[in-house]
Length: 134
Figure 1 (cartoon, rainbow, N blue to C red):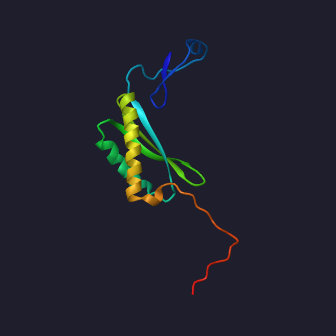
Figure 2 (cartoon, one colour):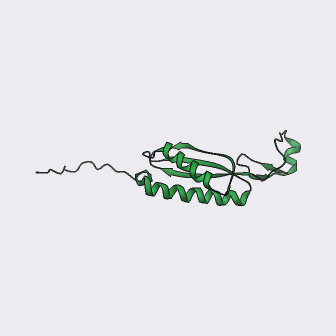
Figure 3 (tube, rainbow, N blue to C red):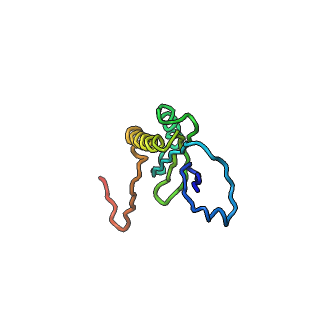
């Protein structure tokens, strides 16, 4: 049995699983997939501006099926936050290429417009003598 999962991929499950457990079938047709891109960024990232840019990236892509897209902060870690972009595509080939296109253009946008928003490591030095300027 082939089951479509949350990101619209298909999962092959032995038929015996369904004979032993109840299930719901919400769809039986279509090849559409959600392309998912995750990227880790610094907390200084202007998420609203990046969301606008992702909207422009997705809308200008021939690979997007005009269905849906969004950008969300899905994790907040110790040093970075993780952003997730979802965008719909007509099939798995377009979804893969759309993912790559979105990721590349997001990185280029951050490098050009918000380079401080790329992940970095911060350190606090303690115990040394302070520099004195005269």
